Amino acid sequence: MLKTELQSLRSLIQFQRKWATLEKFVDEMLSVGCSPSTRTYCKIMSEAKHAGRLEFVEKWFKKMQNTGCKLDTYCYNLIILANFKLGSSERAAFLFKEMREAGFFPDTFSYNLMLGVLQKAGKVCEALDLFKEMKEKGIRCDRVAYSIYIDLLGKLGQPEEAASAFKQMVAAGYKPDHVAYNTLIHSFAKAGMVSKAGLAFEKARMMGCLKDPIIFSMMIKMYVDTGLYDNGLEVLKLMQKLGHGKYEYAYATLINAYLKINLTDAAIHVYHDMIASHCPVGKFTYTSMINVFKKSGMNAAAEKLFEEMLSKGFRQNIVAYGIIIDMYSKEGKVADATRTYTCLKQAGCQPNRHIYNTLIDMYGKAGKLKMANELLMEMKIAGILPDIVTYSSLINAYAKASQLTDAINIFHLFQNSGCKLDRKIVGIMINVYAQVGNSEELENLLKKLEEACIQPDIRIYQSMANVFQEAGLLTKASKLVQKIDELLESPKKEQTCM
Image 1 (cartoon, rainbow, N blue to C red):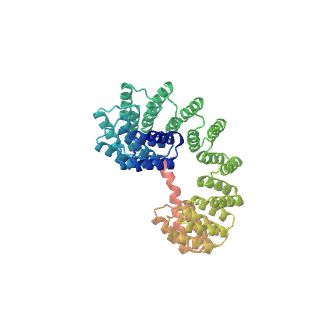
Image 2 (cartoon, rainbow, N blue to C red):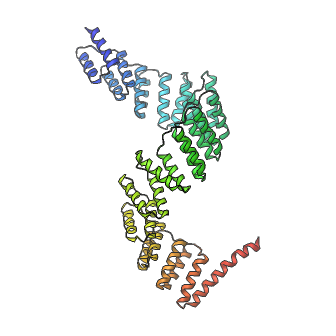
Image 3 (cartoon, rainbow, N blue to C red):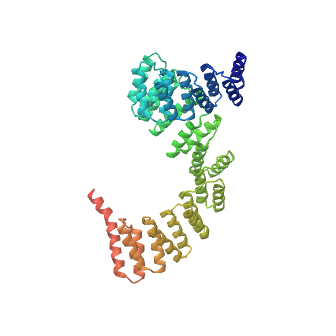
């Protein structure tokens, strides 16, 4: 009878994996004094691990402990592995300590698990200490342990030590795999050792270890960050040749690099290569390419790609919305910009200050002051403080609409906001105060500019001098004309000194 029950239990474990039925079956066995063996419990935990039911591994381990079943290193390895995969680093560390305190000796697999736990948790120094302990106790350090060790040294900014560990691994008889090469190359790249990273990458290529597309994007990023764009492009071509052409991040890295230096034609070429390789386009690439097309003056292409991005489900992309709104704003397409803003809100995105400023400036220039004010109120309610760009746009809009009192009121809000004065807003306000004939405020404005240690330019002095002259304040106008003469003389003096 017992044999039949155990056979049924193993069948449930291995072939059916009916976890609720399995638990009930084991409880019934325990109730009649028949306890599954350590091997059976381990088989249950192993099958649960393979089935991805990691929570069941923990559950069955506790049941195993509660029933007094004998534990061993293999049991602990299973439960530590499950907790590692669940991201429970503290629990994994506790179990590792418990295993040692219980008199079970961790093996290579145990140490590798804990090295991985500490590596993932970012506990670099603890992981290095554990590796040293592993060596001191004569525990065999395999390829996995060395790869983690190399990665840890790289994270500490010790690429030479990482290279030394790589050589130790080879000397110990372990042929480096793609993981070992990845960690070594990353340590060189992170330290800015471009030449050594390139040599390691070439060695990995010769050994057939370029199996992970991440290494290609790593190399591309290193090259473009150091201005070696052609090298980055060569790495991309090699990636395609070796069958890794569907890794989006590598393309996106190069596209974004070309975008930053305004090589938009090169970015478009890389994008076309990406499409030809049937690589899926993600949010990052869509954003970069929308910007590329906009900068190239290919607004129709930018608009089309933006619509494609939305149709693919990437609706929460505030940067892309900002690019399109800015494009429409510069084209004077108020309705299209407004429609895009509505779409942004419907997608659940929170507009940023740049988007608010772009729209406020656009509405102001279009004479839609009510809409500009509504956005200012919305901006404040959202907890985004207006900056000098916001206030400048509004003051300029009211000034152009000859609503000078409103322009002055906005300027007072600006003064109370804590924003720093600059020449642009002063230039706008000189025009406003000139139109209302308020020479006293002009003088105050000039004092505030000087207090802010901002040297007024010739244009500002000239505008103020004209206002004072028209107001009959000839002495003040004369002093400003003298300032203008001094500024005009300054370049001549500099040339003489040279």
